[in-house]
Length: 353
Image 1 (cartoon, one colour):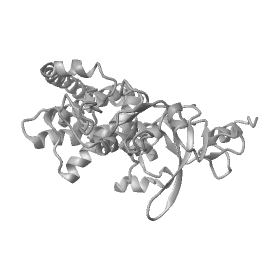
Image 2 (spheres, rainbow, N blue to C red):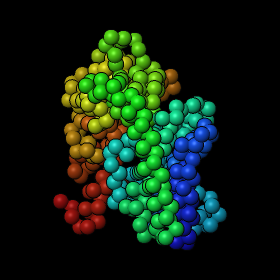
Image 3 (cartoon, rainbow, N blue to C red):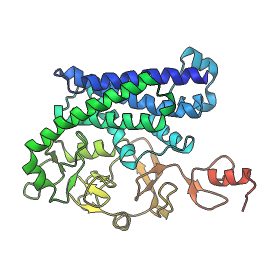
């Protein structure tokens, strides 16, 4: 049964990968959109195929309720992307590069905008998205799924890699056509990765025209600061900027020459310490269980119906439901016994110190 699940996933994801590469630069808009859909599907299934190597139940949203009967009947409510990444790390020992972990959700975001909202994406932008996704899929398949890469799948991956090379040439031609603007952009500090084409060519704030929307020099994408901040932050939410007060402050990590946090309305940037000092912190800071930095703070939010609190790290922007562990005293995800996973594992091993 486990082997059957692996085969089904592998057959699907490699076929999606082949189709994605075939239509990536098609003349018809529908071809390029289909390519993006297939790119997202191939990445989704490749990640889950790696989870299935650990145990077939890991591809279910709730592994504890997964049964062989559900699997036989195809009654699979699958795990979402965020949980997939967490399980790959916790259960399979596979950690994605932080840039990939932050960027892959943008493929889902644009897929949903096209599929459900009928929105168009400029040709240079959608090709950039697809090429990034195909690059990731090929590298992930080679590094994490080599044991299921028979001759046919190896041939698919090699063909896709060759097509990607050609698409990189097309994108390079686009770079050459706007090289003067690029040279201007790279002298600025408020340049960020564009959420549409993924290139570091998004001019965030123009001092000569403060009311102008952010714009990308590569794919010509432009939108309001609030919309762009929401796109880049998704599936998290932007913060309020301490300087201009607008909900347009986004964690950028290493995706910009500015500091870790960048405002898409006023161009101000902050490091975690500056942001912490500007806040009225309800509780904290505590040590973050993800990055280990002491920038985990508890914040309260509210809407018309209810109010709630969440722990959010100002250093890595991870959000989690944390409580203080009765044993080690750190803020962690806590089990029914009141202690964190690390302390629970130590107890099982006989180390209760």
